[in-house]
Image 1 (tube, rainbow, N blue to C red):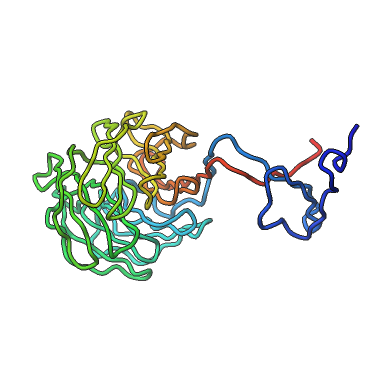
Image 2: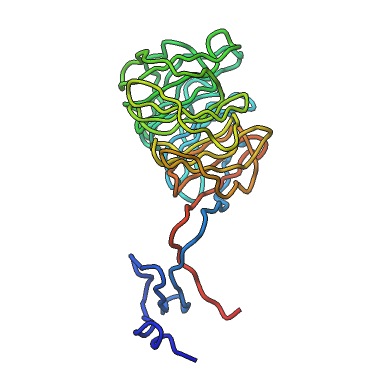
Length: 320
């Protein structure tokens, strides 16, 4: 039988720690943990269990990344509770000033925006709050009250709000508003009114994904206009998406009925990938298409899952 050196032309390296930039096919022995490891490629992304939220809820706002996420608001009952995720566990931090569910979010775990939603009464709200990493501060309201809106934005100084249930508390609207860090300004309307949709991207480059009832529609925003592009494979509302990229995004969960379906957007088409382990709708989501987080929702409550996209992963070899 040929040896590893005869096949690869080199002996297996003995290292005190895993290499920082291994290449696919590389094998090494970690002398600290006394295990043999190698870098292999995955054929598909996968979801893994993360730390559970402290307060079960759905219809909450979200922002951030897989290792630094923010979840705020939600129901039942209407709450202002805000929790911060550090990559392994959730910690309760300062509440929203106005408790509500159906709230939209944008930004990061230290620079977020929460807007719209509904409170103790079902009437849509126009309140906007700014998160600075420690506290929420009320700032200028949306021009048009709404709940279950779509949103996009990389920080609390530049965000996009689109469609959702309007002031009549019954019908979705087509209105779109831009946030510049101080005020909301009405801009070009979206083509298809809907609610309970997801969004990804920035205030100048975004996508609006799905929506109720069981919509597969995807629309793309270029900073001036909306254009309908290729649909989701499985139309649904009450889904979540990764946050800040309009050309590489992940959409997951939702109701059509309630599903765990996960799809990857490459800027042109949606491709189905590995489903969430726990089917749910009205959930929070953040991160990127290769490193995402899904949390809370209906009916799971507190469950958190972390998505790792297809690509190289470190494997530990055993004799079994």
